[in-house]
Amino acid sequence: MKSIDKLAWIELQNKSILSTKSYGKDKYYIPGGKREIGETDQQALAREIQEELTVHIDTNKLTYFGVFEAQAHGHPTGVMVKMTCYSGAYSGELQASSEIEEIKWLKYADKHKISEVDKLIFDELKLQDLLD
Image (cartoon, rainbow, N blue to C red; front, side):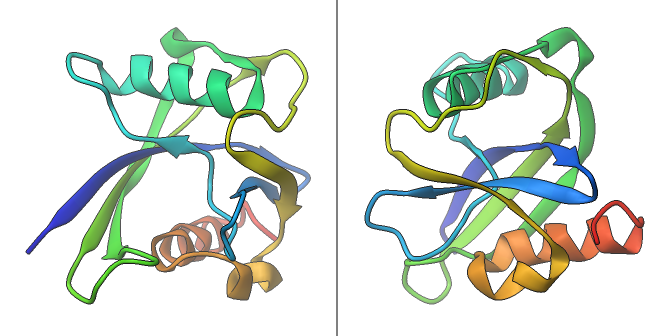
């Protein structure tokens, strides 16, 4: 079974989660991306967030949140995505950049707008009373 290995940055404010939509996509995604060769999780996440949202995350203060796995959106059945999630503070002003068309703060009721793996993350955030 093929698996796509990705990282995600969990940023919560007012019991909403920061989500992004890329150009040409029909779903919102928790921001993040894939590692490049030789990168740690922290280095890759910092690079991806800088590229997508123009902010700097403090890699020394990232907190591991969990790993979630589900069918990869837009891929053939059986292709899974494994999302390793971290949360942590950032500096700068959030702005859509690179392939990101839109930034949106989502609530639990917005689950129909996100990918399958993100639904698992939303469920866990709701269970921990971190997401309305």
